[in-house]
Length: 109
Image (cartoon, rainbow, N blue to C red; front, side, top):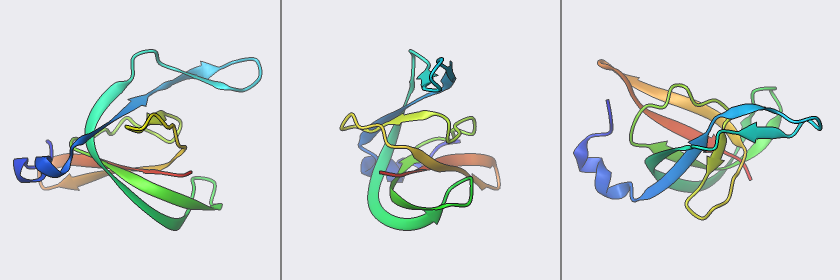
């Protein structure tokens, strides 16, 4: 499922997500060379949240994707339209009566 067509005019941006493929000898993550591009809407809004480890962090914003991306996790690499790569704080897949509908990726600074 995807976001209804009425909402698509508000989703003019594209963000890409690349899966982590491993770690190098220094613990630095490496990512897939072919990221998946998603049409989305970026909302910049700072909020205090808790990350997967329970630590308080500042969320800088959210990327609302036009489709469900259930396989995306905080270990993936998010690239925003301006080329920045903020850390993914959390990923929520929103469901309706027909199943997975769309995903929201919350990101930090």
